[in-house]
Image 1 (cartoon, one colour):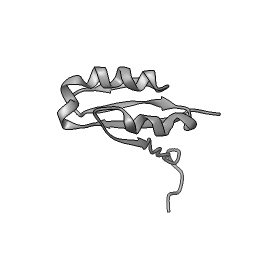
Image 2 (cartoon, one colour):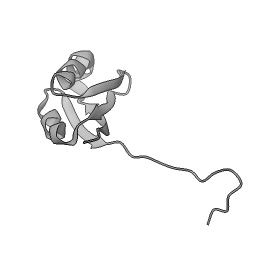
Image 3 (tube, helix red, strand yellow):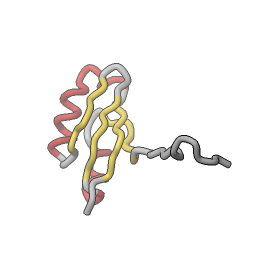
Image 4 (cartoon, helix red, strand yellow):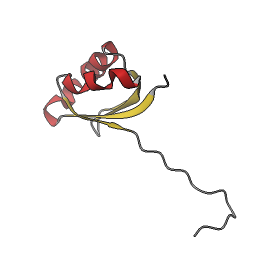
Length: 79
């Protein structure tokens, strides 16, 4: 099964430990692509069956599937 791209928001009181939170997410099966300490966000991917385990990590405020946007090609009619 294909991995889902996800965004994990870290709780304010855990921002100083964001890299440890990322390590815990990795231990639960997440592939971490980016850790953004200033915004408190960790971006990555995980198999859908392992997604629910991430919400139980200490310091995690929320876990959401990453939204995608596709723009039409240049010069196409947009209605």
